[in-house]
Length: 59
Image 1 (spheres, rainbow, N blue to C red):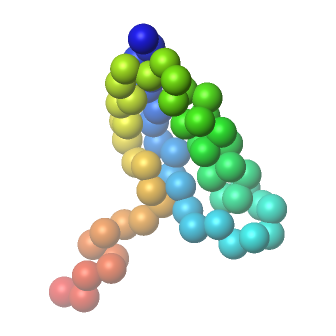
Image 2 (image 1 turned 120 degrees about the vertical axis):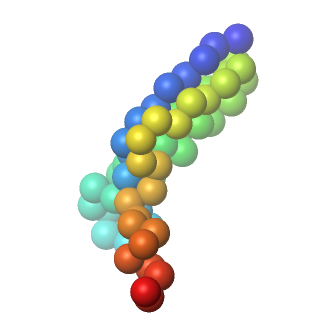
């Protein structure tokens, strides 16, 4: 079994343009599928999503 570490992916919603956000999401999905058979653990370090939660809250 393997342990994987990922960090600071800053995943964003795909916009269908084939740009960087779409490519990163596709690569992350490919990575997850490749690790599925032997992953014992996946540690997510840093920012997984490209969003600032406090900016979504109207204070």
